[in-house]
Image (cartoon, rainbow, N blue to C red; front, side, top):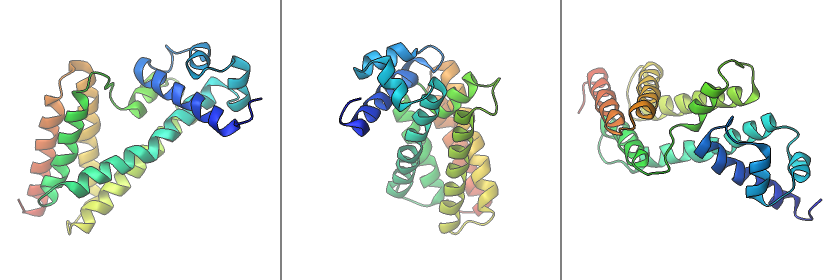
Length: 193
């Protein structure tokens, strides 16, 4: 096995990340990942016992970077709570305009594994979505809004619906419209602009 075991594992995971996100988990073979990582299939299986384990690691590797990015967008937004929520959606729309944007990797993976609800990657995706909702409720509460958990859930529904609709229509205007709806919901619930 290679001397730099962590570096090799990271290289495999990076290759899987790029390929799974770009093409989908079912479309990408273990052979393609090994080739992109510059390792043998045997080396890949030394680090990841199965493709399912690699898919799960792919989503785990996306969890914290995604949560940190949303927190950054929220914190950097100027204005009150409605403006901060709207900024999340505006930044998503900006990301969706990039030619390599393929939507939410967690939702896409869950869709590909819809017939396997107990799959570890589906559980990782569910945990990520739960962590995002909890973070959002805490951020909303910190801004002084009441009923933060319910408001966060409504916003998550708008966001995930926008992710799905953008994949169908390939039009970031849908996430902007969802952001408008989320901001209106915040203003209606908090009585603030």
